[in-house]
Image (tube, rainbow, N blue to C red; front, side, top):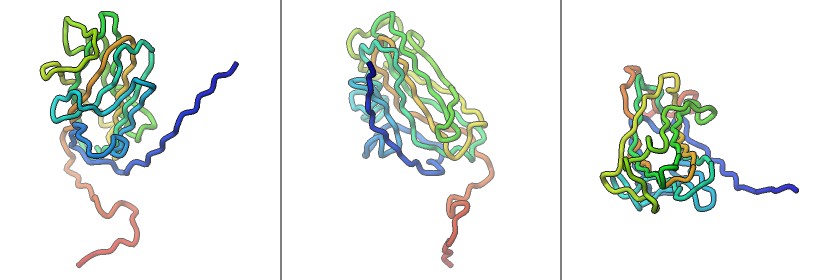
Length: 212
């Protein structure tokens, strides 16, 4: 027998170039995540969402709803585009909070960076299980909601080979009998090139009016 499923396809056209660095994303959205350019994957009761149940700063964070998810499944949260074309060095940092549901929980968080708007991805960070937890030597048998002291920071450099005007981030949680994960205060900083960038008019624009 054959089992078929139908899934809704969403196509979002992102601005090119993307938002200019430096930037901080703290998920204090006045619009939906999709309207802000984020693509959050969900399946049934599990998946990524913007939440007000916990945050490192402000009132919101990005949560991967994952408590007691025993399936070995990957869930993605993909960012809008960012413009790093005028950077010489770049470092990305973020705050995160996570607890194992038991000693056997082996959820894995991976963070990828794309320099071509998501056509290909470079793995820049990975941690899982006891290496990911922010409550060392303890587990949370109930759905995890972090306190103010139960957050940590992770960071990594982005190589110049990925610098472009359409850089995107992908947060991937591979689930395995774990608990909720929270992300907040994604920050990209670095040093800028001395070469100026002309924001307007865009390269190739025609019929440009000039005011004198």
